[in-house]
Length: 354
Image (tube, rainbow, N blue to C red; front, top):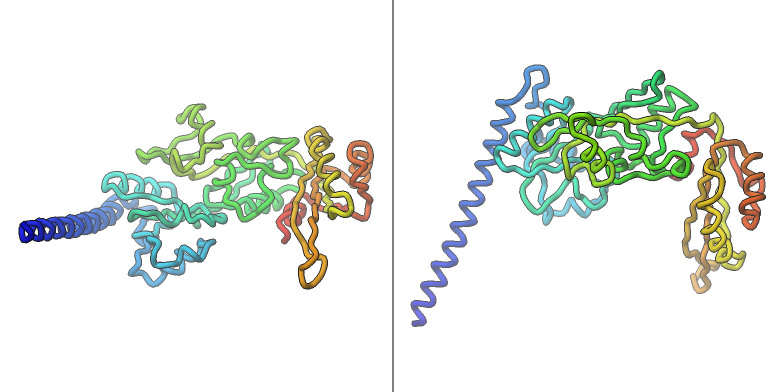
């Protein structure tokens, strides 16, 4: 009986090893077939061969790490892409999608921005990564107050692209320029102009997206339900965003910013309580947020307190801001020396501590 049990166990282990070996060989075969498929589908106008990077390429590691925001994912325990594709044209993305679907290869899309969770460059299964690093253009249309922004751009590049063309147009996105525009919009996206112009997602006119079938869809062809879903339901759940058409909004040539800090001993608790009632009802051109942190009052850290910073963007000049604050939030005791008049673009650099 004991010998029979040992033989059965050995047979079981051998079968497991054979299964794993066959699975590995099958995965390797799928990978090779995937690469051959890409070669077969390559457009002569936009060849893809020079945009493929496998672990055997000398540039593979540098390209992979170029977009890493969390060095934890450099550890060998995390899977790396079988191949990195850096498309320069949407047709190349279509080829990757079509071949991945045909050969059952997983895809991850890296669209720039600070992906600290590593969702765009690692998985638990072998995968191919599409890196949108070459698709970052911002094409501003002053006649129609709009801009076509490619999916690999980050929001800072969008702001800079707009500011190069106009000092009185902006976009109501986030206050961190390193956030990818696709991630921002497809998660809603709020920033310092949210009270006047709403979310970033509210200011999208059109889109170009590649779905699982490799088809390029715009707002009309995808329908309003899907257009609604990708502006809050995370776009990668539905396809790959090639470009967004954004509605630009009016901003004054000069805006006003301020940051006022108060400790618990200076009445910060009461100010935060009052801010909760003031912030939703104050002038729509004015945005006030709070930042709360603990600080040491002495070198050995034995005495600590809480500091609350009231940070603001006002779409107008300092004199009008002071009059509004005197009526709506006099408890903060804002004075002119607390304020700075800057351009709209520089206000976002200030929010980002640049």
